[in-house]
Length: 230
Length: 230
DNA sequence: TTTTGTGAACTAGTTCACAGCT
DNA sequence: AGCTGTGAACTAGTTCACAAAA
Image: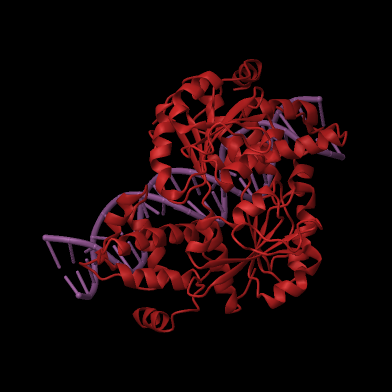
C-alpha cells in the first residue's frame, strides 16, 4: 500500500482510482482558490484544521479528498502551501491553458466572454460563435472574435478549443450542443434551461438559473410560516 | 396517517415536515418545467414512469419527491398535469410574483437583468444597483432602472425586493451582500467566486463559474489517460 | 390492469476517532 | 506534541419492490 502510494506520487498524472465524485472535484477547486490566497499572503504551511475553518467544512473531509490523489501532507506539520497548490493545479488539469468557446454572442455570451474570473485561472476565451450575420466578424469589447457557427468545426480544430459554453436561447441549445459534439469538443458548460443530451464521451455541466431562483423562492415560501431552524 | 395526509392536502401551504433537501427542491423545479411543456402540448395526465424517461431520473424518486408534499397522484392513472403544475407552483412559492434586484450593473449584471429566462416563471427584475455615478439613473436595455447602491435599503422597502443577485467583482461581494442583508432581503443568488458569509436567517445559493469550469478541466485531464467508463 | 405511495434495502457521502509519522 | 491518512460508524440520498387504490 505504501509502495503503491509512492508509485502514484512519483508518476504524478494517471490516477482515477475508481471514479471521483463531482462533489470532490468541486471541493478541490475551492481548496485551490484558498491556497492561491494563502500563497499570495506568504503563508508557508496550512493544516487541514485551519483550512476547514475558512469555509464550512470538516477537516477529515479535506484530508480524504487530498489523500485520494497522493500523500501530500506532512504529519505534525500540515501541507506545504506552494507544493499542494502545484499538485491541485496539476490534478485539475490547470497546468496547461484550456481554450474556451462561447456559443451565442447575445447579452449573456458577450458578458461571459469578458468575465475576468474566467481568464484568471488558466482559461482562455478564444472564440464566440453566433448565427446572426450582423455579429459575425466583429468582436466582444474584450476582443474575443465572433465566428459564424457554421465555421465551428474548422475553428475548433484550428484554435484547439477544449470547452464550449452554451449561452444561446433555450430552443437553440440542443442543436447547438449537437454541433459542438460533432466538432469534437469534449466538455460543455450549459447555461440554457432544461436538460441537454450528449453522448457519454462528452462531459456536460449545467448551471440552471431558473432552478436556482426557484429554489430560493421555495425557501422564501416556507419561511412565511415561521418553522424552526436547527 | 391517511387522515394526516388529507389534512395536509386540504390545508395546502404549511408543510415543512422535517427539512426538505436542496436536491429535492431543485428537482421540483425541473418537474415544473416539464409539466409546463406537457400542459402547453395539451397533455392531460402523466405517469411518474413517463416523466422519469424524459430526463435521467428514477420514477420512484419522482413519486417520493411529490408524495412528500401531499397525495397528488391517482393510482392507475398518474398525475393530472394541470393540477400537479398548480401544486408545484404553489409549493415553490411561484403563485405570486417575486421581485429581484441585481447588484452590479457591469457586463454580467446587465446581461442577467435582461435575461428572458428570469422573467418567464414569475420573477420580476425590478432594480439594478451600482456604485458608479455614471451608471446611476440610467437603465438596462430592457428598461431595468439602475439605482445608487446607497439607496438599497430605501428602494428594497419601496419596491418590495425579495431576492438579490450578486454580480459584482469578487472583492466587493462580501460588503455588498452585507448591505443586502441589512436591507432585509432574505434570499441571495451569488455569482461571485468564493464563499460569502450570511446570517442563517438568509438563504444563500452560489453559482461558481470557476468551480464549474475547473470541474470540466479535471474531466479533460483525466480523459487524457483513457481509463474505462461503465 | 395500471400506477401511486412507501417501508425496506441499498448506495453514496460525511464525520469520527485513532494509529502512526515527524 | 501535532497533524496526517484512513478504517469504521454514521448520515443522507436513491432505488427496489410491493401492498393498496382506482
